[in-house]
Amino acid sequence: MADARGISRRHMGLGAVALGGGLAFASLPADPAAAAAPTRGDGRPALRHGSAPEAGLLPGPLKQLVADAEAFLQPSPRHPWYAGAVLLAGRGRTVALHKPIGMAVRYQAYDEETDTGVEFPPDRQIPMAEDTVFDLASVSKLFTSILAVQQIERGRIELEAPVASYLPDFGRAGKQDVTIRHLLTHTSGFRAWIPLYTAPTYEEKVQRVYDEALAGPPGTAYLYSDLNLISLQLVLEHVTGRRLDVLLREEITEPLGMRRTRYNPPASWKPKIAATEDARRPWSGLDRGLVWGEVHDENAYSLGGVAGHAGVFSDAWDLAVLARTLLDGGVCGRKRILRPESVELMFTDFNTAFPGDEHGLGFELYQHWYMGAMATPRTAGHTGFTGTALVLDPTTDSFLVVLGNSVHPVRSWRSGSAPRVAAANQLARAVPVRPARGRTAWFSGMASAATATLALPALDTSSGVARLSCALWWDTEPKADALVLESSADGGTTWEPVPFTTRRPGGTAEAHPTGTATGWSGRVWHDLTAELPAAPGLVVRWRYTTDRLYVGRGAYVDGLRVEKGRRRLFDEARPADAARLRAEGWSRETG
Image (tube, rainbow, N blue to C red; front, top):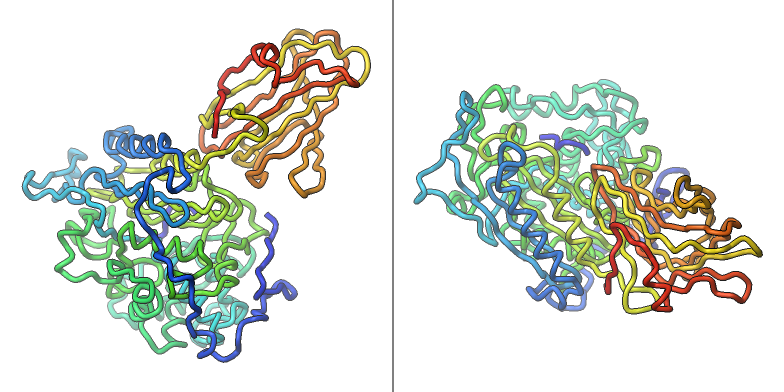
């Protein structure tokens, strides 16, 4: 089922070069057998459990991550967002949080008339466990995408080749120009989905995909569609001669030791699987009753449980192994499933023409709506309709798995992505920002719908040129949240922006003529300078404002200083000056 929603193009990596808008894998061997040969890794275990400090994380935000997640077990606002969840967070090779909450199986049915869940007797309810298996829903698309990139790497598929060159019947109804890249980046022009489950046979379902006309010309718009990954499944099965479930097992799960990841889990797994929905019309396309141990998505179910867009079951640890493998450039221990340059393509934005819908090959990028403050131009991930999410941040080498059964007992009980955002915010907060110059730095906080100000005392800048300098670190939701340097010459009645210049280590100077910093700055400290207006009692402040939806990692200021010639008007390093700073919403943090 299509999940709700879904920079300049980055360097493509050593093996990929841009050629007239297309891509050529210059360094990849032409011989598929050579391309498929495993490359040895370092042999170290991919993951281990450890403490937050061992992972380079702050323990406080991880504790808050759990508390925030548990709050969604209660009415939020009317019904629980999920019956239960498994939370996993880590950095580097250390999993610092692996916590089950709530129930994997709680309801046996949904009462439509009273809008309540009919619970199983207490002795038949099953609590969440660390190894509870979930229907991943659209997170399954990542596996199909990895399998496709493997075949691109091996020369069996070309990224810019028309899909119809592999499946001639696909070219019907004006789809002859749709390419493999269009499928992987959701720019094919397919509408979101069609009810394939109404076709009586597998062959007729496939013919419906072939006969489907596009909603618009390929490459002209972003439109998230399950049909893209179903089509990619058909290509993969055609060029390899293997079914998608066999490809998954042989090319990903067996090499990586992901023993609890597969399509169509056996009946013996059922007690360890989180239940999903009491599936009945009209909210479901099929009357199936409680779905538990079988794929929830109607189209995937009708395709025998094996589909490119949905159907994979997995647990949190296995997904963490996959995340670590990709963050390590495609290698896990001594097993390699992708080359580093191929992984780079999955983390590279191909949708530069569609700002806000950044997308690598299969992976969504820079999506605050579920990545929260973990979102950066290189942060990759995906969500699933059943309540699942995987987020990978190469910038901080961190990863997050949130697996919830949010359609249990019915899909209408939840909306939005608040639990995913809350968890991502806390993991981002757990990655420390070390002060630039001393033991502490000023931190703006990460509250939404808030304004935080950090003001210097009134200074006499009336004679000569006064300059402000400091170290500045910022990461905000682009355009929606901003950090502004401003001044007032009338005691705070009116404020005017103060233009400033920043320079990151080894970089060139960047002007901020509106006195504003917003969006992505690389999560590194910048040196800032600004010329201040002349006034006998000038007040200068930082003002950080956020909207009500999503936030970034916030802003940090360190080492505030104002000089006029050789005279120092203000120096935060002097205790008397530091005591005169007025902070509302800002706090001192050690990092």
